Length: 341
Image (cartoon, rainbow, N blue to C red; front, side, top):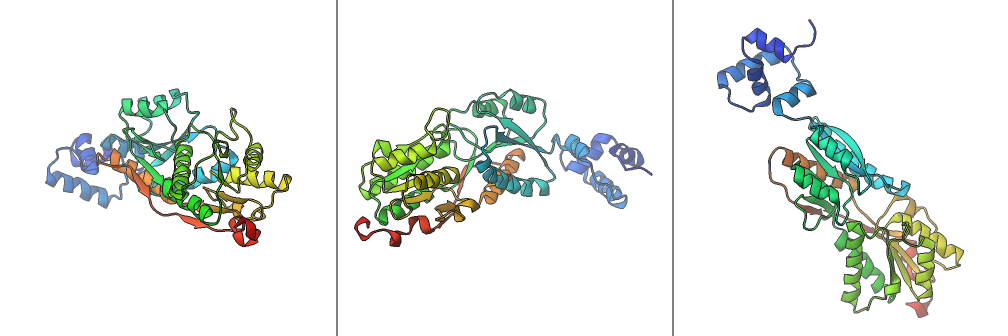
């Protein structure tokens, strides 16, 4: 005998396919006696509903859409990959598959098509942008959606690391180590994470009674409209920066290369740190101080939140509290001349 189907079960028990589907899904009006009868038959014949059958029974596709930024640099891939692993840990146990759709921050036609054709039960955004047209589209279409990151004022929940507190702590640490003119180098200013890190940096300066110097805050570095990381570091150093904080590991690596080419010694002449860690930063010479987050946990939490929304349960934005500041040689003030400390 071939694989058992809902039709086979319905025929054997003399009931409708709808009754069998309701018994399998646990939804809809059906008598307890009939439900138990269907369940007993399924157990005796070792029936496992296919994804299609489950979908029909529960009005679900059992697919989760993951919106992946099209402009992902190679250095950013580890973050998104770890998030995806965390998402997969949760969706796999829930019997769901993942569909990845690329998004350039402007054209939402492919995602709109994905939703309107009922290909997914919900979506996870892996990057948050200021004024993102996709957010409005998701709200308009009424599909369950969660963002990895913060989305102030949006109607869909965001799951984020505690970037603000972590960046505040690291900036404050460099200030306590003697920095009075720290510079901040960041990427695309349309990314909400860039704005969060900038605001945290400024808050740390205010807390220490240090007035920010405009030329020491350089954003959009490495974008088509901004300067390259090397020029940003050298420009900050020319303005008397005694420490450089980069918003991510990619910028930190470029900053270290630029400092070496200009014969600026790290940490003797200038301290260097990153608001985001990756394995490569520990291998540089000197190794770079950075903030480490659990990106897999971020992915897991976003998927758990989305599944709750899909099941009709309430879900709110949340911030994961865990992070670690990994202190390395690049901020070791024992290597600096006494006059600088």
